[in-house]
Length: 145
Image (cartoon, rainbow, N blue to C red; front, side, top):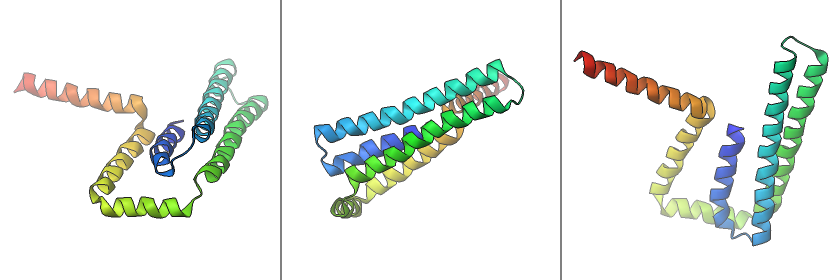
């Protein structure tokens, strides 16, 4: 779900270059919602299956495969909707020209990419735990020093 969330945020950020209509934004938001809801239902199905049947079971495997398949279908169709909304090479050129004229924005984009990768890899709980661990180490050093 973290990957889909990051992709949705980048798609939304870059959508302003395309001057989409209100209906196009509605389609975009429905697409975001479909993929995120699919991920949530998939996670719920997997958690319920793991809770109810802690050992390997072929029926559970099929349920998990079907629920993850539903997310895959939503993701594939979201890509197709994205192609319909965003496949405009002239806008791609204007985006490249914008970043060429504003090199600081390349640094901003790179910084958000690093933050996004950290978010995808660690997740919000992993980030929180690392921040807390670092604070605790600083607190102990102050007490000792």
